[in-house]
Amino acid sequence: MSKNSFLHSYLYVFLLTAICLISLSGCQAASDNLINESKQDDSLVNEDIQSKTDSSKEEKGKTFTAKIVRVVDGDTVKIKMTNGNEETVRLLLVDTPETVHPSKPVQPFGPEASKFTKDLMPAGSKVEVETGIGERDKYGRLLAYFYVDGKMVNKLLLEKGLARVAYVYAPNTKYLDEFEDIQKQAQKDEIGIWSIENYATSRGFDDSKSGEKSEGKTTVNSSCSNPKIKGNINSKGNKIYHIPSGQYYEITKPEEMFCTEHDAQDAGFRKSQS
Image (cartoon, rainbow, N blue to C red; front, side, top):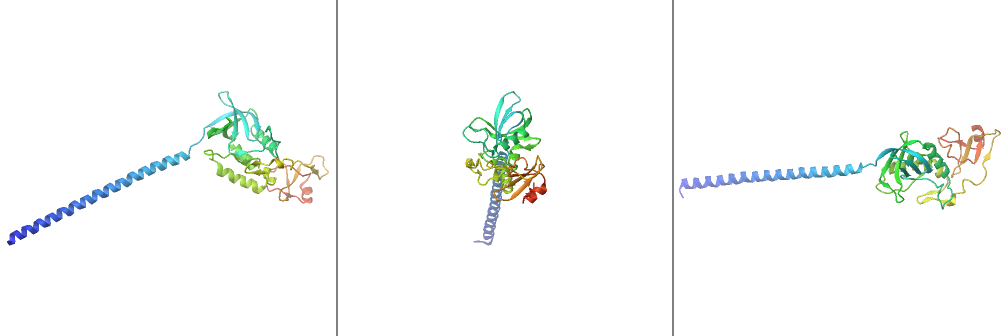
């Protein structure tokens, strides 16, 4: 082979090698671009799915204004809609003791729960109603949260110890965590239904406790004709007295009545913290 032929062959091989390297580099870049575009598409799809998932959690029931016809008991109310139709409404996520059940006795704190709801929502008053997602129970009653002056009635019943958290069925669990926290505080304070040991249970209210708060007379330890201070002994044996301006005064059933705080203290009672 001549020197010129060898040089031509060498240059030919060099050019082919260079062309191949450039082609491979271009292919790799195209491949990388395709992978990146695919990842971006997947990211967009995932964001879209997440967005749809998050938005589904925000689903809320309808809110409207209605007029109270009458309070049936602590957790059941009849209302009149703006179209004139009447509806029976069951308060969501709460259960109060019975007062009008056809086969059960009047349960402890049932009358207090009923009175509390009636005082908050007297006949003829207007309330804001937020319906649940399912809207109705198996009896055809609307399921809802009631608001009076911006305060939710369902929560207030739990705060006063006049209801337990119950009837928890998805998807109507919007306020469940908050309700359970409120209930824990009422249990800690031993107020209302929680002042009777083992009365309120996960299955309902124990009817065997129905006479526990009504047995015996209230002792009047004072010389005045109309004592106002209520002395109560809770399930732990703590002696606590409540004054008329106290938070739990109305729902407290007294074992003893006093005219003055001094009288109550002399009898071994301490003042309620609320």
